[in-house]
Image (cartoon, rainbow, N blue to C red):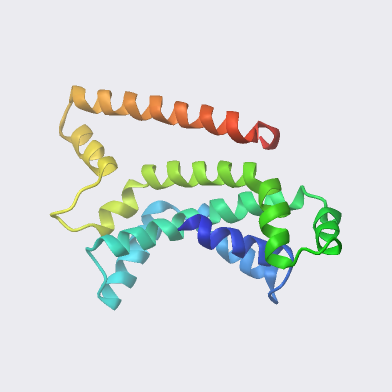
Length: 186
């Protein structure tokens, strides 16, 4: 969901299609600088006010709010690195706006989007404070379960799960690097 929201947002902000693009971009980056506890409490109060607290939809929406800035930032950085003459050439050769984006722009910014998606996934998985505030007592997620197990004492299953997460993350990063080559942007 963060990719579906973040990519068009970044494109509109980069092309300055919306008035006040700089202000909107700054507003979208706010979750990057706010502590997770502050975001968790604010979202808890908001979801309690509108009656969405304690369900999976509110948790998903909260994680979208937290991860969209990573996608927008990565997409803006990737868009800044491409030559606008390539898009113009595609339009001159008969491609309309959506075709130009799909056939020219998207492949050029794909490595940045993969990097942003990986940052988003890792941030979402690691964001225990927001999750703790928003889930009900009967629900649990893997990061919250790991956090709770660490608080209760030493449990070898936490070490095993952590090792598996590190290995899986390493494999995903290796596959992403091989398929998109985002090392050029780091």
